[in-house]
Every structure is written in C-alpha cells, then in structure tokens.
Image (cartoon, rainbow, N blue to C red; front, side, top):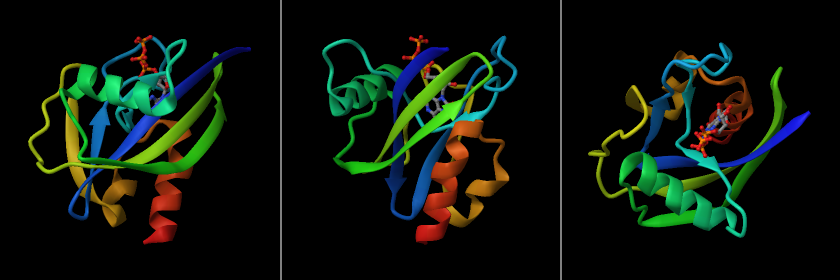
Length: 132
Ligand SMILES: Nc1nc2c([nH]c(=O)n2[C@@H]2O[C@H](COP(=O)(O)OP(=O)(O)OP(=O)(O)O)[C@@H](O)[C@H]2O)c(=O)[nH]1
C-alpha cells in the first residue's frame, strides 16, 4: 500500500488550539474533515523543516516555539498508510490566515471532540484530552 509521511502542528495560543478544515476531496474520509495544519515531508527535509515550510505555505505562520515530538500516529486509510508526526507549537496571535483550508476554529482541549476530525487525528485528540 502507498505510504505517506506527514508532519502536523498542534498550534496553541494560551489554552486554545488551532483546528483547520480541509477542502472537499474525492476521498470521502478526508473530505471536509478537521485536521492539524501540516503536510508531507519532502526529500532531504527534517520533520521540523517540513513543519516550518508547511506552516508558511498553508498559513503564513511562523511559530514562536516548536516542542519536541508529541505523538506519531500510524493509520491505515483505504488508499494509503499514513504516518503522522505531531508537534505542539506556540503562536503569539490568534490572527492566522488560511491559504488552503476552508475554515478554522480555536478550541480548548475539552471542546476538541465536537469537530469532525480525520480518523488519523483521533489518537492525537484523545491524548491531548487525557493529558489535560
Ligand atoms: N497535514 C495533515 N494531514 C493529515 C492530518 N490528518 C490526516 O489524515 N492527514 C492526511 O495526510 C495527508 C497530508 O496531505 P496534505 O495534503 O496535507 O499534504 P501536502 O500539502 O504536502 O500535500 P500535496 O502537496 O500533495 O497536496 C492527507 O491525505 C491528509 O488527509 C492532519 O492532521 N494534518
């Protein structure tokens, strides 16, 4: 099966986390789902380099700090196997603009569950809730 390796940012401003909604996609299981911003690691990039590049591409966003790896999730979607490395990052503003996503929300951890997350994100959401 095709393998995809991505990095994703759990962006905090105070006690809220930035959640973004993907556009419509032919793959129903990711279409219009919420996710953490990020994307595929390119050849020769470290995970942190990929994360910084994706955050600039998707959001024009420069984190003030990126923590060490939070959690790696391996998830089998019907068409590919996803390995996703997540990192907590910090913002000095709530004003982040969307270049690719169709909507966004700032939510406290206890409210994360109200969104329709991509399946691969659920272990990350659950771990954030457990750690509260
Ligand atoms: N960035 C990100 N991708 C996720 C998350 N959850 C999840 O299932 N994915 C999946 O991981 C893949 C990442 O692809 P992407 O579209 O964000 O990456 P990219 O911008 O580098 O891709 P592209 O240049 O091919 O469009 C997608 O299939 C996406 O659905 C998540 O929380 N963040």
